[in-house]
Length: 160
Image (cartoon, rainbow, N blue to C red):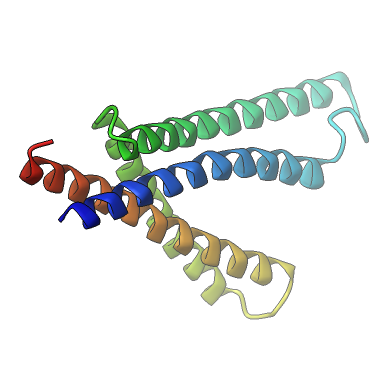
């Protein structure tokens, strides 16, 4: 039992570190996607309203990316702390569950988009990559939740 407890805690620390890195990656990906889709914020600008709208859109994307990073950072740091046997917070597990649910919805949505697209183009390849990444995120998040509950149960049995 002690061996499995160590394994589950190690899983929490490794997956927690991965969540922090995933948060950084998502923020970079969001910024890069925005720039690639919209170009420079003031490039190709028409009138003043278009410039203001693009700046607001960029700021909104940055705020959403920041919130996403903070959520993943919180989940990751809390999982690391629990893996080290420090704090056992329930809030990060709730957020991880919500993230898992949203990732499953995104996978289903991307699969429907993929099925409805008849040709093999850039969008199809992008959807395939998104599906693969989101399925991986789902699996890793499920392991994080399982490891947290399992390590708590084992620690309780062992009297920790």
